Image (cartoon, rainbow, N blue to C red; front, side):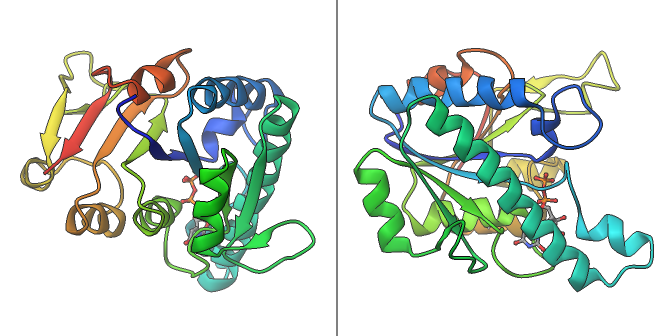
Length: 235
Ligand code: UDP
């Protein structure tokens, strides 16, 4: 196994499956099955999920809502998604813990780094909810921050696209995919991998990022085993 401890970042929208809003149960089951494959190989898995399928602070602000209020709503949305994924993982026979950056002790442990790493060592999947716990950040930043804190080998950004392209492959048939990039190349080419706060945090802490298609069966395991699918961003 190439990566022994991973931080998997899933967007909230990915949980919608083919729906327009909310959580698709089949998609949850598929993701749980994919995650089980790597857990069964002994890989330590931490997960951050977004909340975009339920609420985004920026979208609320665009309609006149207070941004900070909206951001907290977005963070709570990530806890709902985290609970949904936790349920699906446990149904698949995986031990899990949900840790939240906003304390809510009836449904989640508070985020405590040492506890999180202990859970990982024991083979439990740890889901980090409520983002960073601060407004004006994203779950990409939360994923990067947690990955660095727990000493993950890599952050795996699961998307519906199979890597980073020179232009949007969903709009441009001639888009060319990169197999690997350095952090500097991403800046130079103006490519969008994660938001700048998250990307810079990864860069400054030498945390490699792999962007890959999470919706293709077997991909997560292939990456953990070192197969060169997706796009790797590294120093
Ligand atoms: N959010 C926040 N601070 C954080 C992480 C998230 O305020 O540290 C809020 C923000 O409003 C964001 C929403 O939670 O829009 C959902 O997260 P995100 O947009 O990153 O989800 P994704 O796009 O991955 O589904």
